[in-house]
Structure formats: structure tokens, C-alpha cells
Length: 331
Image (tube, rainbow, N blue to C red):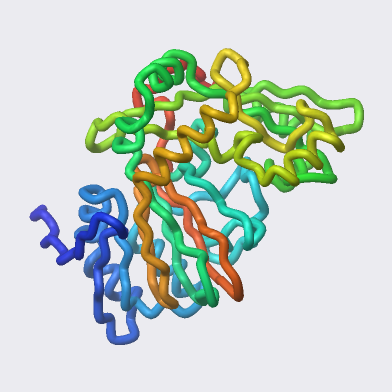
């Protein structure tokens, strides 16, 4: 089979690679005709923003996503609620519009996660709301060597507290209220669990912080160490939650792989390196952004006004296939 003809992608150091197209009202047909070339461009650049598709609704987004991917995924272990639409697409995570959603790799705390993320813009806010992107090999190179060495050796740990009062409930995160099914899922996915006296659930997940890209072999900083850490929270929200639930009762927090707390200064360093490597280009209505979830971290900036961005999680990849530095194979 011949290689797909390359697409003319506009490259700029401060924004994602941009591809401008004309589709004559048929984005699904365009995706079918150019899918291989577009995927090759994403592999080469880490992301591609397609402008001019004219996407209009969830069914059209689903149809395009299915032609650009091998398989769409069902989300489990989410950290914020989403609305599910027919056809395997979701709303963007319900996150306060005025709060920054910091850089992260989607579901990087799972043993299986999307290799590709698709973001389809149907309505733009009056201000803000851009999706920032950061190249993870560049972020890895920009972090202090001693910090990388420690996370390389130890990995990182995610601690979650599921209750009916804050964050996602157990049922929302796991798709079931059945304790036996939840426990079986945790055992199969290398998740330590402990039921609390009030009926809540506390879990711990030990994961690699650095992985190798499945296609290029590049070492990638791949985790949610900073985003899900307590020091990334709004200070007022952090103080309130600690007062209400205690330091160990936060809905989520991250630690070094050996369980040691991660200092605020470390989180600041990670976020500063992300900021120094961030590219952004506001999505316009009808745009589609494809992101290599292992090569590229993404964020969402604060916004005002209506914003509708649909999301598809696709092409699942297993942590075990990325040369992890921490052995956490599910059983």
C-alpha cells in the first residue's frame, strides 16, 4: 500500500499545526478520503488542528471520528463528569469556566488510555477557552534532571476519594454501584482500594511518569502529576476542602511513587515548564483538533460565554506496551 500524500500543514512555534481545508459540506467524506494522511501528520507533529470542516452536531462529529480512528473508547475512571452522546462522543469535562484546566494526558493513570484525542468545536465562547498543547518530550527535556530521575525510578501515585458529596461518585466513575464489580475492576487494573466507614471509596494507583511513544520510541513525560495535585487547586477551594474533609480526604491528589508528598514547589516547576512549551490557537466553530495523547499534553484555558466542544477518546494503548519504568501490570 502506498504512503498517504502529505497534507500542507501550516507550522508555527506558538500554535498547533494548522490544516485549512474545503469540504463542500461533507466532512465525513473528507475524513474518509484524507484520514491516513491526517493521521500521519498527527504522528509527525503531535497534533493537527483542522479548520474548515464545518462540523455541526454530535452525529457528524461521531461519523468523522469513526473514519479517522480504529476504535472509539468508553471513558472509565473520569475525574470530572461528561455528557455522553450517541455514537461514542462526549461533552468536554464539566470544569468551572473561570478555572484553568492544567496540562495533562487524558486518563494517564489507567492501564489503558486513548492514544488519540479528538476535540470538535461546535460553539465558541466570547473570550478565552483555548486548548493549550505541550510537546511531552520537550517538557521532559525542560524539567530538572534530578526530578525526572526520581519520577523515573519511583513513578507517581494517584490517590482518589469517591463520595456522593464532592467530585465524581463511585457509580459515575466506574459505571456501576455494585461493590463486587468495582473491586474486580480495581484488582484487574492494579488499583488498591479501601471502603470507608461512610460508604465512600479510597483508591491508590501507582503508575510510570515517563513512557516511550509506541511509534517513535521517544521518551515522553506522560502523567497527571501536576494537574491532579492538591497544589494546583484554587487556594480557596483547597483550603475549604481540607477544612471539610481533611488532607487525606481530597477528591484527588498525587504523590511520588513511594508515597511521599509532592511539594508545592515541585508542582510549580512542572507547570512552569508546561507554560514555557505551550502552543495555542483558539478553536473556531466547525474546527477539529486531533491530539496524540502520549506525545502531547493538553489544557483548557478559562473562558466566558457559551462553549461547546465535543470529545472523542480513541485508539486505546496499554501502558505495558510503552516500556513503563514501574511494574504495575493488572492481574
